[in-house]
Amino acid sequence: MSKRHSNASEMAKIDEQDILKRIQDPQSRRRAFEEIVSVYSRQLYWKIHYVVQNHDDTDDVLQNTFIKAWKGLENFKGDSAIFTWLYRIAYNESLTFLKQRKQMTSIDDEDFVEQASFVADEYFDGDNTQELLMQAVSTLPAKQRQVFCMKYFEDKKYEEISELVGTSVGALKASYHIAVEKITNFIKSKE
Amino acid sequence: MSTKNNRIFAPEGGRYPFKVSDEYFDNLTARIMEQIDSVEQEVPEKAEEVPARSAQLFSIHKNRRRNLWISTMSIAASLVLIATIALKFIPMPSSTPVEQQKAETTAMYTPDNYNEDLMNYTMVDNVDVYYYLAAEDFEE
Image (cartoon, rainbow over all chains, first blue to last red; front, top):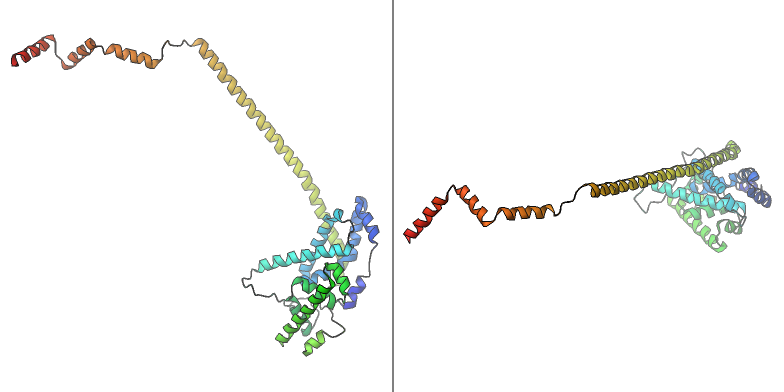
């Protein structure tokens, strides 16, 4: 996924007011939700992938996200943008998934830092340097990983990220700075 | 900063090094909507089942309670009837059996009866008694 590709896909937006109206009507609800899925699934996929870093797991979390969104559709009154609402569900689902995965690995060592390996991943499309970068990213905490990926790979503005994750711009800048420092140190340690 | 770091943090930023086929995204919406439809089908079935089961259970409980209540009432009524018949037709003794037995025992063991029984038991008659009494007088 290229940096610009992500922004281009986010250009595809829908008339939120119209969608909200159709969501309220049981007759048109399903069709409206199908449009939401169609427009936002690709963006959500990558946001989830930043956290779980695996295609199959991302697919599971994405499906769960939309199922939860569907179940909570009646309660969505349009207080935030549709994508922001979906993103928050997706992020929480990703965190739940990470917790479950951690429990399943049942590693006793508390100091163990999860460090993914991407060599065998058929969906990985990078060279050694990029693999090293992704390994470094995988050692970051989930939220920091999200912020770093949105800033680094999508070149998003802090204001946009702030609206999405609900954290102040200052805190996001600090988070990104710390993430860069950690990644730099990780790469140095591997050289 | 090292060479790799220089490359990673170059001003143009980075490319996210993962790819997914367009086919996956093309089918994604249909697949998710299928999932949602199957979830939707499960929910009404469960919703229908719950009241049906609870209604059935409630009716079972209701019937059981009613039967239990009828049984208890009929047993109580039978007991009352038996007791009434018993009081009417069975003659009641003037005194209690314990008192009667006590009176019989008292009558049986008056001093005379006691002596007679004692003599029968020891196989002595009046002559033997006089003999023993006379013998005692001689010894004195």
